[in-house]
Image (cartoon, rainbow, N blue to C red; front, side, top):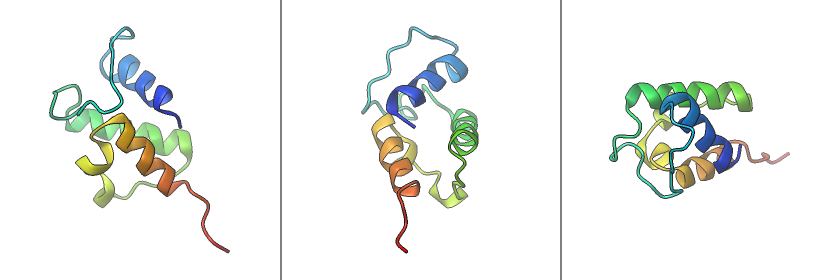
Length: 83
C-alpha cells in the first residue's frame, strides 16, 4: 500500500476531510490528527486491504506515527521471506 493510499484513507475515512494536507513525516498522533481509535481503524483497514496480520505489539508510535513510518513498517511485514 502506498503512502498516497494510506493518506487517502486517513483523509476520507478518519478525518472526513478529503482536502486535508498530510505531510509524510507529520506526527499524526502527537498532532492530534489520529487518536487511538483512529489508529485501530487504520490498522484494521490495512490488515484487510493488504491481507496481513499486524500483531498488537507492533501497533506503536515507531510504526504508525507518520505516513513514512507506516510505509516502512508495512514494507517490512509484506516483504518476501526467505525459502
